[in-house]
Length: 173
Image 1 (cartoon, rainbow, N blue to C red):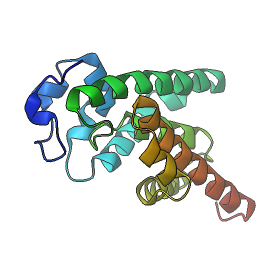
Image 2 (image 1 turned 45 degrees about the horizontal axis):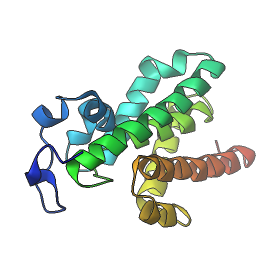
Image 3 (image 1 turned 60 degrees about the vertical axis):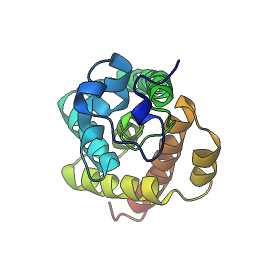
Image 4 (image 1 turned 90 degrees about the horizontal axis):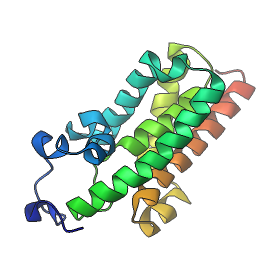
């Protein structure tokens, strides 16, 4: 599918506008219901959107339902980010933040309850998502498609959960 707007088809192009994003369902999903349009640090804003959705909706579901929502959200994100990245001509545009939302839901699901634990989980997840330690950086550089967009954040979530488990074991959290 050719890009919708040729001006968006290179790395130096202007960022997508709200009117462009809100013209299609895959774009709305990929841009985290619009949170990926906020600058600076769209990934942080997307993670905050994920936290808000968790508090309002997802965190109130049963564990089995949360598991289904996370898997379905991952698959939906692979599709939406693939389509949106193709239209943009940039497979992993910084404004596509659905990956942060789904990965952070995974972190919140397995983090001890309470605002303090959730805030620490937020900071830890953002650090791993930004720094991208191995093998996150490897996958981020090799998989330039919807799956790749989603997968590197799932790995950041896994690192986050490992550190949170250590903190729980050490009774810090």
